[in-house]
Image 1: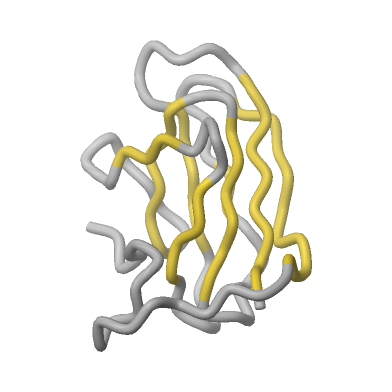
Image 2 (image 1 turned 90 degrees about the horizontal axis):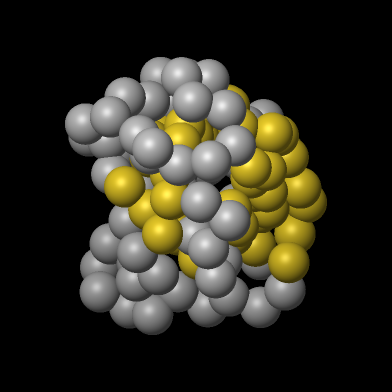
Length: 103
């Protein structure tokens, strides 16, 4: 399962999100295709996608990984030096996903 968590640090403190950071990737998603970001250099990411997606840390993502509703955009904790992989939830229409670091 993914090591990515919600917008609270692992010690329970609220994550101090200040400004958008560097884009770590934008890609069109189709059923069965996986998109993997560039290496994340911050402790949090912003994900936006008009469809439901599976998201995992690393270069592989499966249907067993966390389903994420990023249709309104969502902030997630991330581990520095790791990549994030995304794929569409079964039955979702093709769309584009954007992933940015946040500072």
